[in-house]
Image (tube, rainbow, N blue to C red; front, side, top):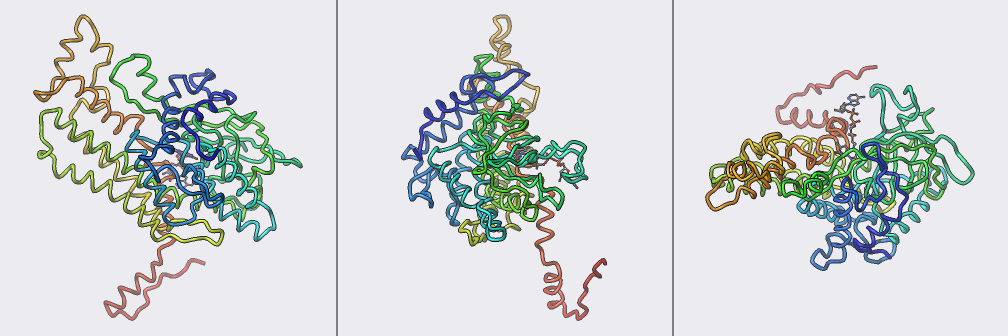
Length: 487
Ligand SMILES: Cc1cc2nc3c(=O)[nH]c(=O)nc-3n(C[C@H](O)[C@H](O)[C@H](O)COP(=O)(O)OP(=O)(O)OC[C@H]3O[C@@H](n4cnc5c(N)ncnc54)[C@H](O)[C@@H]3O)c2cc1C
């Protein structure tokens, strides 16, 4: 198959075993239920765009495994251009839906993160993980899979490691090893795009130490696997739109879920790490470089929509953008900073002997700190320019605007610029509210890991004494000015 349409994707999603819950109830059909349908419709759009010549090269690329055209999110990124393609696709996606594109991102990044790790493990232990991953990548490409990426364990007490928790399920682990596969137990929390996924890729959330072998596990699991229960956490605003059949909500649907693995069997061919603690921290390391280089494009793409909505809001309020030039320019600078820094991390990246290309760790992690900071400044400026109706809780409901008793008068109270309709001002305010403080806010703070882990990598990869020597040479100071190392 290699390439499929949105309609094919939705048909396949309908055929999967229902195992996604919300408000205590099982969602029978994810493609029609108001809680999930906007999200799936959005994923279907990425499939359709892959077939549309207008988007040639954005959503598809050439697979190095088959030489065939494939959905970009099913391929292994072997060259710098593949990572640039990742970033460009994300900016385009965020510009289109204003929020996270779902299961065409993290699962793909995990498959790529594991490429070099399985290669290195096989070299050290004589295992066949790389061959298994290669076969899975061919399968993912052939089936044109949508894949979520599950890294974040529940983690329990953050001051302790996996082996020291009161409940072993707080980290996903191998409960039983069988001849033909493994049995998984535990939780993965806050996994974006799970409702729209066909497979879930799992890796450890952190490196494991000796004695924690059961937690050093990487695998590919069908989203509807027996024993896997999924609880949808996010409530797309589309839900309300359906309920009200009105015009004051946003046509876009995020999804994030809690995954409960209760004795989920995974056959050996879909297991890519099982007990190799020495290598257990490497998948998250690679994942972070890919993700943190490219998330700069995500927040820039959303920022593009925020800038557009802010200018539109100012105009709907009867003001020209001249009144806000400095603020608007700063918003654009914030967008281009995270986008450009991500591209810089890719430009300084390196090819691993396995053939996979990874961005530069220091630059990618430094970008994460900007990604956890600048978009909030952009959102603050949007709120400042937009006015009170953009803030949460300052807009009447659609039903009130429709009231026979007072609706017309209420609507008139929201009249802005002379030649505009109050409805348009309300719609734009709703969009900005959603983008700046609503469910449209992407995971720029903790998505892809917390900024502090970025700071840690920057600290560890900086050769501090080399920098001191640069200064010593210029200042002509002979004293080496080294710190005594603690014993
Ligand atoms: C919108 C969104 C989308 C997401 N999507 C996904 C996804 O698709 N897949 C996925 O796997 N995960 C996903 N996540 C989860 C994300 O990876 C985690 O939120 C992130 O790794 C932080 O973990 P936490 O939320 O458990 O925070 P915590 O671990 O509770 O951290 C809270 C704070 O404490 C600090 N901290 C934690 N432990 C320590 C320690 N030992 N010492 C000092 N400081 C510490 C952290 O740096 C942070 O500042 C998503 C999150 C969000 C918000």
